[in-house]
Image 1 (cartoon, rainbow, N blue to C red):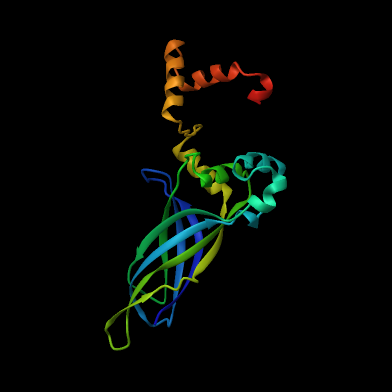
Image 2 (cartoon, one colour):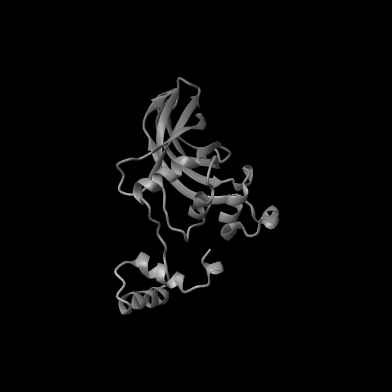
Length: 216
């Protein structure tokens, strides 16, 4: 019966994807090495282990929306789910390196985006938890099926620069902000009424009406 050892070897930015995409390289080693693995249907849950790194004063301020005041981080700084993803690994014997695609978003309604954007340097502590199914060839040549044990996981520290470079590639000097429709309609009417040509200028004019301490 297969016993898979899974590790995260590296990560790359997918340069020609239709939307932001990171590709993690998953190293898969099987015991016994001579066993023929026909297919691995690999499912992965990726968690952000936020408590496994330190944060400077600037990062603490940027992450306040997510975790609250720093003096409460002993209660609020917890591991959180980033995403689920899956891949089908083709036939191999012994070891193989597989691509694990992870779609990313720059939507600031998503907690993971707030976290990645708030951290300015260093790396992001991730935990990959694996599950799925292995199709393999037994000693008598018949096809067998076995589940991947739920205790299979791998740690990886994603460089912050990789994520920021990805977002700079797809959203250069821009960000996405989702608004409720009634709020959007008010802003839209203000933009039309004042004859403002761009959304940026509409927001800047609205912000300029606030006291300076609030704008900062």
